[in-house]
Amino acid sequence: MSHLLQLLALLSLIIAGAKLAGAAAVRVGQPAVFGEILIGLLLGPTFVNVLGWPVFVQTVSPHTGSAVQAPLLGVVQDFEDVGVVLLMFVAGLETDVDEMRRTGHVAFWSATGGVVLPMIGGIATAAAFGMPIFWDGIFVGTILTATSVSISAQTLMELGVLRSKEGSTILGAAVIDDVMGIVVLSIVVAFAQAPGNSLVRVLTIVVRMALFFVAALVVGRHFERITEWSDRLGVSQGLLATVTLIAFVYAWAAEYVGGVAAITGSYVAGVLLTRTKFKKRIDAGVHPLTYSMLVPIFFINIGLQANGRDLGAHAAFTVTLVLVAIVAKAIGCGVLAKICGFSPRESLRVGVGMISRGEVGLIVAGYGLGHGLIGQDVFSAAVIVVLVTTMITPPLLRLTFPATVGRRGVAVEEAIARTPGDVHGDTAVTFAD
Image (cartoon, rainbow, N blue to C red; front, side, top):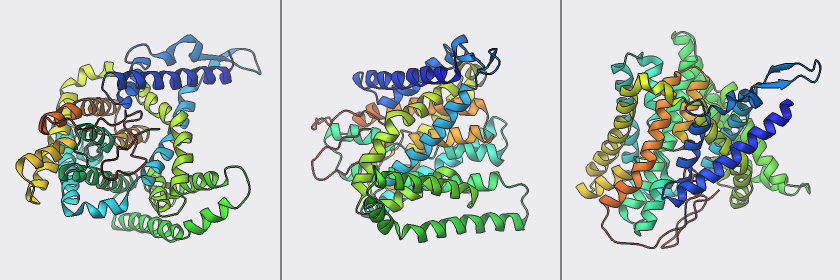
């Protein structure tokens, strides 16, 4: 079988498996991403090791006619990397800066606690198991800083408390949390990849980062005119092609010029494009492009790269990391909410609502693995953290809120995706592809 036919067969298997597993997860009350990552683990080396099947291991050379090794994993990884860039672009598009301002100081300080304490907990856990603090321990802490707003938001909507004081705080804090996580990732990556630690090198890193962000903001001021121009080009999907180009250029510039993670650049591009009048049309175009193929590949490939068989030798580390991820996030967010004036019960609800991890955690873990900043054992443990925190957050929220049944919201198809719309009054928002 030729390399192209192998690739087409593998992509068909990945996309079908992701969507069917996601639908099955929703039917049993779990977010779609839970099923997507699980089917990836099933297809990966943990169980059936699909990439080790003869049909995918060898291909026939068109020049010699002999069997050669098929580099399918590398091609799938390339698809995943593009999907991650677009996924973070979508996250940027759906970052509501005005909502962040409206939620006020409680959301900000809760998010801060939800970043600082998990970071400390991750570093301490890594150090306790013999990992060097620089940069392994810091990267483990960075993985734990993320939060998934969609899983909590759907549960709050079902309970009829999405627009309550606690619900609004959770939504705002989760967005601020991920922004802080991206900033932390950018700083960690920049310094981790810089050889040595002399003052000159540190200053060079700071200058490169500042140069990128200043240039990104300056160019972003012209996005309104750029998108208007592209919309008048008279070519098919001119607007969508232009904003995709912007996302890719910003991602390239972030890593090549700024020395920070490429996903930081695409995220910044998305945030800046939310201020244009084409925001809804950009959403409508980018979501199908991203979620029809590239995001399923991302989630499945997470499972393909994780090897649960390795966790046997690292079971204590994995269990400890899961517990730290849950406790540190709940306490970090809850205590800061209490300090800001919330009652103990309200603070508990905020803390519980922030437990679930999301795509940012997976992206950070995947980036660390791909760039040699963490090992396979840490990556596999991070996948388990995402699965466990995703699964336990809805029932914990139902326990902490009053047993009143609100209107049931629509089902989450892509639970890790950011909310593509807003919530106004009692209107339920569809969390969809």
